Length: 571
Ligand code: GLY
Image (tube, rainbow, N blue to C red; front, top):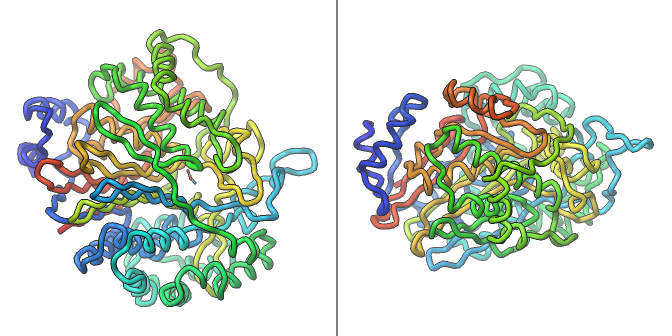
């Protein structure tokens, strides 16, 4: 498709066609947007990180389900087809905005088991025990996904629960062809997966690794899904599946017990709300830092001239804003049900004005302390976006934390458990697997939820949903969502270009600016170095799966992130 045709399908009321052409032409040398497929639809749209799961959601929409029904079906399908992050053994956040205006967050973040203690990952000298919060059964927190999907369906779903699990059951029992990306991911995590006999058997075929195109069948997972379809979340938290989780935990010296599962509840929370240049921003409140960080940064940037996207000027202002928001994350954020989190203060416009002044005067840089180098970012965590024909919208991000979580599969039940305990402050002042320094408010306590960066977000323009988006990427998530939002709302890019555009990331500690290596000009890089930034490079950051709606015509445009193998499907 040619650029002219793309532009004619994206009608921004406030922006002339000419200025769109200018913006697109400026970036054209770096990433060919016309190489990306345009997915436009009149009624419903699903964008997910794995095509079969996206199709499962579309099937539900076409069968008369609403956006929440489709999201539940995608959530279960990804647990089969995208085992590195899709899950029933992890947790996440679902942001729902109904066409009538009601909005809610389903918080189904995992919780620390009752026997968890503040120093459980430290040895007698107070030193971190290597990998203890990341690998094996002790790294797992109480899973929330099944409770979360069930709560969303109970409150807002239309189709019968059993119908929503059918695609996932079919994919698990009949199998599906392993994609090139999945085969590569399984191979690269074979070290983790081979530490657990069940994971080794299911995902590595006891050493005969999957090649792309071979069928992956998961009969035990199909059985688990059939049980959940027949009996609802009860069987997972109180019945046969709960017993299987507890038995695996006892055998592998993990902490989750039947009582932990029995008491777990997904919660409904108020979305965190902000505004940016007249549009309303809805995102998630603690225990995710996503909404607070995003709104804090948007408040700082709102009145500023951000110049040309990805120019030195623009990167500097945005990176300095990121640096300050992540410093606040490290200092203040945690589960607000356990300690006081100053969300209002951090997202106030007065505070943003103070930060802005500091950034513009280029003074008072935060003192540098040593941090762990940022590890390679794999595609752990996954996001999907759904819009239905009535205008209901769902932004859902969920995760096992690291790819394949703790690496432990529940015996007889065929699903992986998370390693979300690593998202707690396991040792104050010491970085987690994403290199993030964590706050005192995020120390481990029984039944507490670890601090997340997940940032499912919806933008509302003139009372109607305009954007639905989110991303994986651990500590980089908030910055990925920020940049895609700015690309649309400030730089006036269409959604494909906004998602494809190169990304950068600053998280305060370690004090470095991380760039996607392919996306920035040599001149810009030189200026950033001259300005004193320590630059690091990464192949890619995040995988934003987004939908934009033209609020005047109602057309839906889907953008699956070209960095990974996702898909946008609509009708
Ligand atoms: N486990 C990644 C996150 O919640 O941010």
